[in-house]
Image (cartoon, rainbow, N blue to C red; front, side, top):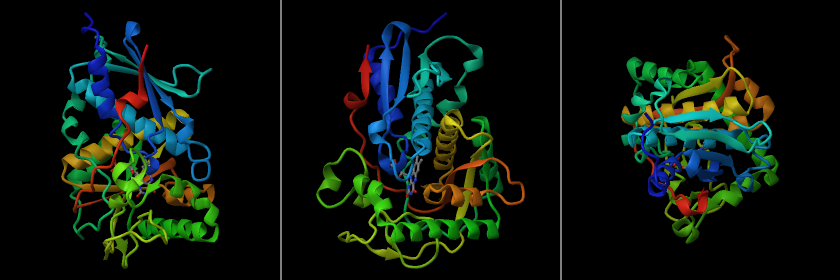
Amino acid sequence: MDTPQPDAKTVAGLVAEAVTAPSMHNAQPWRFRFLASERVLLLFADLDRAMPRSDPGNRALHIGCGAALFTLRVAAAHAGITPTVSLLPDPAEPLRLAAVRLGGTDPDASEDDLVRLHQAVRRRHTSRYPFDEKDIPEDVRAALRAAADREGAELQFPGPWHVRTILDLVHDAENRDVLHPESAGDLRRWTRLGPEADTATDGVPEYAFGPRMRDGKAPMRDFAGRRPVADRGTASFEKDPHLALLSTPGDGPADWLRAGQALQRVLLEATLAGLATSLTSHALESRDLRLLTRDPVTGRGHVQMVLRLGYGPQGPATPRRSVRDVLDIA
Ligand SMILES: Cc1cc2nc3c(=O)[nH]c(=O)nc-3n(C[C@H](O)[C@H](O)[C@H](O)COP(=O)(O)O)c2cc1C
């Protein structure tokens, strides 16, 4: 028997949790529509929030929406509602990224394991602070690999020289930005400095930039660039950052949505395990550098995200648009 039909308030609550997901530059490139009579919540891409220079193929946009979709699944499971997801349900409408049926009794759709992750949803924040030079135990790594695997992706912890290569590639990406200042257009649009940082409902506010890097080579995008930020200190970052690569076997819109779901499952598991996390897509924004981030030995999969994990301060919460602005109910 079906569970009772979720009302508008319940759906708004689920969406409020879904939008806590990470997205590139906190652009929040999503919209939701609830079809009450069908008890289906649709997720759409919002192309007004796309990044033409740094994400021309909308790969990162799909990853952010996939992360929101995973968070929606967690929120629904926590509310006792079984979510049944179909990705890209209408080939004629590529912006319709997913249809989530809320409620139902499909035993294969059991999402019981998701409930546990709920407590991490509002605790997870990107941390652009230095982390301790401390190992991540093998059982924690194994749990994170398993989390990615559950969503059809692979999480790899590269060895020391592969980490060096990735750090060099991030550095190359930064140097390219210096040579081609026009490529910083997306960054300028989505960073919030001065008084705007306290009022904006999207973008990366200056209080989330973290300190300027004094030395070390952690893959941290400096959102300030050369712009001054009041009271921003400098700090030394870890010499041997713990990086992880998230990859998928294919490289199309459905793979990117799976990557986003896997990313969020890994981030929530990591948060529960007491880890702080940050992300970088810098080296993945140009095709040539992205290919070089792959494990050169296995050469397997398409790298979708570089994660940095460690023990250290959690980052601050960043703003989100209100549910009113992203959800309509039909
Ligand atoms: C596809 C994608 C790419 C991202 N790339 C970067 C990046 O290059 N550097 C960075 O510091 N954060 C990156 N982030 C993290 C976002 O900036 C972050 O999720 C957003 O500002 C919201 O903050 P929160 O994660 O603390 O909620 C990325 C996130 C996603 C989903």
